[in-house]
Length: 226
Image 1: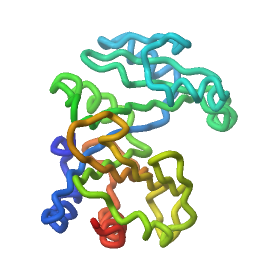
Image 2: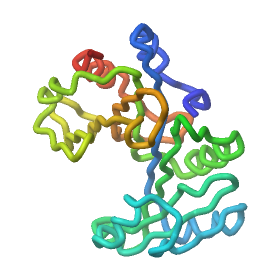
Image 3: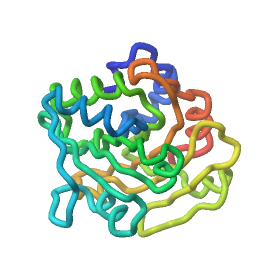
Image 4: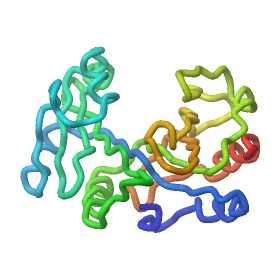
């Protein structure tokens, strides 16, 4: 998916860390759209909209946001060959937009054991070129763990099982969250794989969206591979 971007400053970042054998990919895309505009878009395209319920085959994390009432509603958008796209209505967004906007999220885009088909990639990029991107999760994968003991440079971390989080990290302008976890353990992969995931605030169409290459390099320089 990274190859589909016109201006990709991550090329220079990845070259700087090529000896570390890091793999860069986008795992999640987000934007905010008017509900009626996006519903009309789905009607004109080959997408279908299904309300997310208890038995809907979608991630546990997505369902959790419904049952903990983080969002007032959630619907799954089924595109050709891919169903990990949802529209949700967080309470704050409802209040700010007078219940006219929703959050559009495509997740699980970078799975080592389940690569996206070309048609699915093209459909997702088409959606986020049309409606833009407000944030995305950059996945940086390594066969060796990152030095998470140095995460304290960016603030206080929270650990849950094998995952470490830092929300609103210090000394960074565009990165809203840092997460590190054992990807092989989480997904039952046969070989070691550790993932550093950065939630990045951005703007623009997918193919032109801003990527803070300097901040990404800064994090990787500090969290050197063990």
